[in-house]
Each structure stands twice: as C-alpha cells, then as structure tokens.
Image (cartoon, rainbow over all chains, first blue to last red):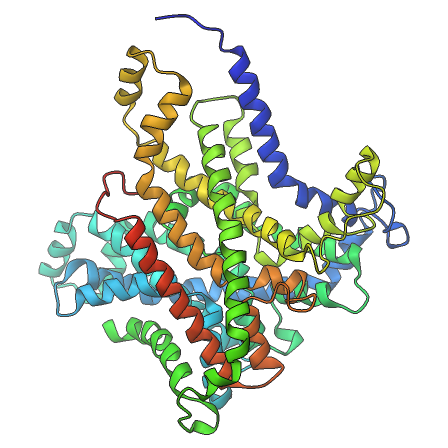
Length: 274
Length: 271
C-alpha cells in the first residue's frame, strides 16, 4: 500500500472541527460577554469581554432563583410520577401478551410525534373548565403525561432484553405482583430507569409551551417562562437576560455532559424533543 | 394497571379530537372555523414550510459533515463532541435569548465582528421585515444540527469496516469511499432524521415566539404562533383548534410523501 502524507487532511479536519465547535459555542459566548458587562456599558461593542462584572449574576439569581426552584420541583415530581406509572406499564407490555398490545405500542410511538402546541388549545380549554389552570399539580400531570410514552418505550425496550427467570422464581415463591416489581424488576432495570429519568428531567426542565398555556401566576413560573418575560419586557434588561440565560442552561448542560454516553444513545431514538 | 397509563395517552389523542369537534359555545359549526381562517391558511402554511425545510435541510447536511469529521480518533474528541452537542442541551427559549446577543444591532457579536473587520458600515438588522425569517431559520438549524450529527455519528460507526478495507485494496480515494460506501449505508438514518426533524420543526414555537413573536408584520408567523394568537388574542378556541388540525393534516401529508420517497424496507442499520 502507498504511504501518503496524512498531515494535510488532518489539519483540514481540525480546522473544520474548530469551525463547527465555534459555530455551536458562539451564541453562548455572546451571552457571556453581555452577562459580564455592567448595564451602563451595555451598548459598547465587544468581541472579547472588556468587563468582568459578576454583579449581573447576583441580580439575575435574585430574580430567577425561585423560578429555578419551581422548574426543578416540577421536573423531579414529573420524573417520579412518570416512573411510578411507567415501570408497571412497561413491565406488563414486555411480559404479557394481550389483546391490543400492538395498538398500545403503536400509539406510544404516535404520541411521540405530537408536539405540545397542537394539543394545547384543547388541553387549555379542558383545564379551564375544570379550574385546573395555575395549579402545580395540573402542570405536573401534563408534563408527566406528555413524557410518559417516552419512558414506557425506553423501559419496554430495556425489559425485553432481560431474562425473566428471576421474576418467575419470585412469583413461584409467592411474592405479590407489587412486591415482585419492587424487589426484582426495579433493581435489575436500574440503567433503563436512569435513562428514562434523565430524559424526562431534561424534557420537562426545557418545556416552555405547556407552562405558557397553563400558568399565569408568576409565583409558579418556570425558568423558561421567566426567560420569556425577560425577552419581552418593554425595556429589555439585557444584562439580566444574559446572566439568567446562562444560569438557566447550567443544569441541563451538566446533565448532558455527565450522562453523555446515555444521551447519545437516547438521542438517536428521538428521546429529546425539540 | 394498563388503564392507569393509557389515560394520559388517550387524553392526548382525545384532546386533539375534542379540539376539532368542539367549536365555541359547544355548537357544531361544521367548517365554520375553517371559513374564518380561510384567507390566512395558504400564506401561513407556506411560511411554515419555508421555515421547516429551510432549517431542516441545512441542519442535516451540516450534521452529516460534522459526523464525518468524527470518524477517527483524535485528541480531545470527547470535549469537542460535548461542545458540538451544546445547542441541543439548552431550552429553546434560552436558545432564542442567546441568539439575540448575536443579532443585536448595537452589541450583537455578528454585527460587532462585521464592523470591526470592515465588511459593513451600518449594522445589519437581522430581525427586520426582510431578513427575520432567514435569521430565525439559522437559529433553528443551529439547534437541530446536533441531532442530525449524533444520528449520523452513531450510524457511521455501525458501517462494517470490511467495506472500507475492500475499497482501500481497490485504491479508492476518500471521496469515493464516502460516495459509494458511506452515503448508501446512511440512507435509512437520513430518512428517519428527516422525518423526525421535520415534524418537530414544523411545530416549534419557542424560538420564533421569543425572537420575533411572529412579526414583523407576520413574516415569521408560522402555524404554531397562529394557534397561540387565536387562543390568547382572539380568545377563539374553535379557530385555534382548526389551526391545530390544519397542522396535523399538513404533517400527515408530508409524512406520506416521505414514505413514498424513502420506502422504509431497508432497515439493515436501524438505529
């Protein structure tokens, strides 16, 4: 085989990689510059940060900390609720043959195709009739509902790849269905549950449309809603908006980076919407 | 047990149905809701299609290019990969906010750069009547590219190495290998990515709502924005639901078209 110099292509590949990475990072970098600039200097054009003023982050934190806590709470509650419903459902789907099983599986996939905005008018009017608007519980129920199919789907695939002998042994030993689920199925499907939990967490944390329709009380606002109010203020407080954006993206970015391996697997199956 | 989890899913499906069948005051008005919005359907659907394909196609091409740069091991691969996935981690509304700092006339990074380099004297108004649609499309492509990238990256790593070795023996160039081995192997992942991104992008709301609110003068007013407007400004549930149904019909048509174009028979390298 011929020996060719590989230096040229290697440099070109690196140049393109840097170009792509820069394209991906630049908007975030632009926010960092503004977030570090005091309000009086905000109109100053900067390519590299000229000011290193962290006061904006304090101001932003004071403004969005309660909303960040809200988002965190909604996400955790949705994850817990989704798992509590999805584990038994996925188990039944994976282990039992019953009438309509294929239809259920197909509708799981189908519901993944539907984005929030299409169902929001009907959901809004239903909630309006029930007096369920501006309710933490109502919001959590919807957030759980739209993510449920995803978790069931992930767990279903995972459970199908597991042997069923242990469960059968537990059943023969007289364990109840619930007990068998908790002490046999849950422990062995740990990785599947973790993946499902990660995706529901990011999906609910990033959700904007659903709280926009269902929540009007600013005390119950999510981080995404408070970002929206910053974007549409009559006089935009750019410095606070930039700092809030950065604070708001920390959590999903950490989750994304720490669980990158799972995320990459899940992304290919379309687990994160948007 | 089954019921417990079926209820929310069924609720979703029924919700869509109720939306269609339950016009204002509970009376059946037939196509009345559609007649109300008739004159705006064509331009709005057209804008939505421009928005969708204008961003999905570049996102897929860029994602493919990026994935092919990640085929070999290199220094800091994990780090570069994390950076390239960043757009996908961020909530869409924060994506909108970050890009405002790129597009701003006074201190936006793009304008500052162009002025410093001397390419432009006056700042470009990225969100003006003429350029707003192009600008939001770039943002959407930025956000969607990592999804295409990851899909292609995963699919490329499953292409059997022997095919490349055989090509090496035959003395094929890098470009030839890409054209005759890589691309054919990526056909089904391409159609899958295309379908998923199309469906999502078609209904994306946050980016445009955050950046332009559908303006200036409706140039970026896509179906999802219109649904929200009907509901909040006009307080008309019937027309909002009519728009929802319009969106679903158009999406169904696009899906059928895709199925015709890319028969899903070939699932050898299913993701």
